[in-house]
Amino acid sequence: MSTYVYGIARPGRATLPEDLTGIGDPPLPVRLIVHDDLVAVVSDCPGQLRPKRRDLLAHQHVVTETGRRAPVLPMRFGSVSDSDDDVRGVLTEHADRYREQLAKLAGRVEYNVKAVHREDAVLHLVLAENTGLRTLAAANRAEGGGSYEQRLRFGELVAQEVREREGHDAELVRETLAPLGERERTGPESSGCFLNVSYLIEESAARRLLDEARRLEKDHPHLELTVYGPLPPYSFVE
Image 1 (cartoon, rainbow, N blue to C red):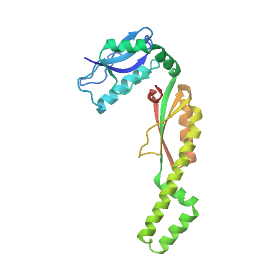
Image 2: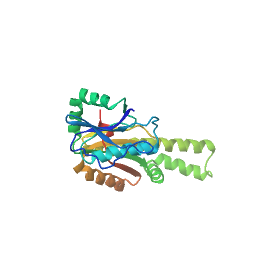
Image 3: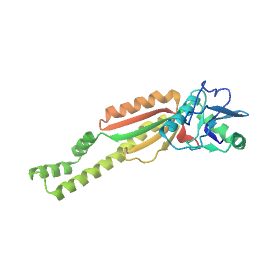
Image 4: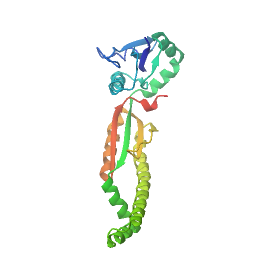
């Protein structure tokens, strides 16, 4: 049976919780493969591995539980090796690289920040800041709402202003939060937010990041920030 790998950590300090289970149906027991001063956190791999929600959550749970006890290099979901011996071979081949990365991650966690606009608030702000839009809106109202072409043109102008505001606010958030982290990594674009960014941050600085995010929302009511963390540092493992 092939071997599923959750992450790489240090032995001794990476003792697993009793009866920890991972992916599979039924969930498979998690164990350690030890090589010198490194361990791979693994389990057997089911014959049919698919990114089901239960298995995705189980993967993250194992990495999180390991990370509570020691720095861990989290593997992406679906990291599979042919056997335990192959895992030992990888640990041997890349041992220095793993040790270096574990040292860099010691005492650090990942926080992910996503930013969106509160729709009514940002529209109010855009109109308040743009005299031309206010004038056009008033002219349309005076004509009973304006023609279809006038309403379309007005909507395009508003959308353009909102996009410019998104760029401005993305920079505002990054300039405020980036100094609190050691590294920053931009996440994939999403239609649900205009900013998706992760920070590698010392655990002791986490409260400051959360406080700054809340202050940004208070000072800029059209902003809504969602902060996820602490997380295993997926975005900062090379």
